Image (cartoon, rainbow, N blue to C red; front, side):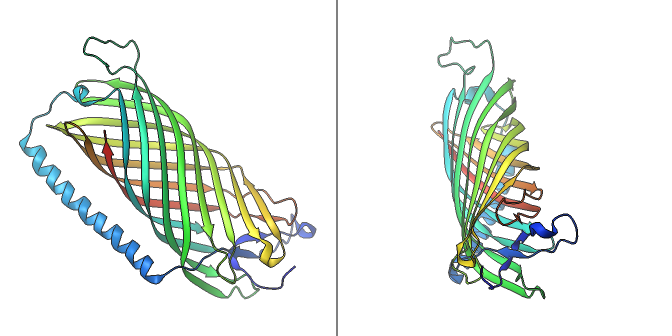
Length: 320
């Protein structure tokens, strides 16, 4: 086993002292990137924020001059979505470390509403909705924490390469009216985060995976003319998580930590313009996770500490 110190994150709880007088050593993962890349990411998010402000002003002016139309006429039986996203990322292990940075990527979705007529004469006896979602993002983060020596020497690393993604399958029921469509839904989701931190002398690669049940409410409301307001609130029931840490360089091998307790929340509010052949929307969002201490791994008595993740960003969506 190596005597080299690590950056703080994962905690060692030796079996011989488990239950009383436990001491903790923590390690953190990181990676090497380019400083200019980080600046580019920050610039991208700022530009998107400015775009959001311009769009909100434009929407306000447009709404003031138009009258509402029947919302149900703009819905499609089958629709696809695709577009870019960008967000600010913060991961914290209270008392140990913090990662902050920016991510950007692409998202896509497919929605099927059985009750929306395929032909004008069709009628539906029920209002079911099926939706499949996916996203993939890449980014860089900066680590602020300390080493695992007894003095807990302060330690920082910039431009750590990360990538993240999600896949979700949702089933819901719509409650449509002329100018409002409310939807309740539930489903299954999988979230992953890959941290390529092995490039740093005190770092290591880590893989995180969450399995959860999303339960949410979405409302789609006609504001004026072809402009719609879309708002979503969701609670994510955490089923289980798994953290895989590649510690071979430090003499520990691969460490697996199972997470059993936690929850997530997310919400968004956006504006959508319904066109003849394609709809366009801009949607600010927030996603939050809070996860409790993991189980000890069976070989080295390591634990993944309690942590929380916040993602604050912007979606730009094309629907057809």
